[in-house]
Image (cartoon, rainbow, N blue to C red; front, side, top):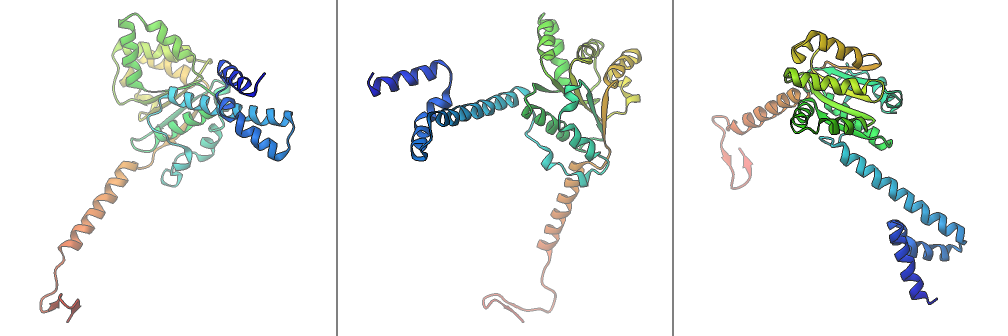
Length: 278
């Protein structure tokens, strides 16, 4: 068989086997192995390692895309010093993802603007990197989707899709109260996840005020019973990041305005054409 025909067949087979990295890299790796005087086994090892690493990278990218994180935030950018109420030791322990293996839940409770969504996103990002299927929702978004699915008779399909994830992130519980139907559907999601999946919920409300959101004391009690059975609770009760930044910006604006409004003192002559003051 001629070299040209062998090359054509090789590339065809690599395409058919869905080995794009090996297709792209087989010639450069062969050249490198020739220079290094590596044997055939070493050549195949290098080539398959590149394919495997690239496949893992593509899978991680797909998981991140499917998770639909609102922003890409990691723990490295979270300012623990600005939120001393957050248990840093527990956060770093949760980053290892063992709670997902054990089907345990995480609740992040605290005031608005204290980094709850940042922590939830960082934990979701870490879970994706560990090979787990994650889906991020705001609670109002999920409830709206559940209600719409019930109307068009695709609710069971949506619930089945939710069950396929290792971790469901439910962000911003407590900002908008639910209708009776919405509360019941969210309870269905929590009930199905109980001891099968992990839920990560962020909320600005203490537990005793959840009834205001769900509208039913009995439903709220049943939901909390399932959610808190095996749970890690993080509290973020410091000042709002956004409020702090707004105050800093206001102070900087005032400082700039004050500087621009300053005029030369009376009795002082300026000679601007020579660049000196006398």
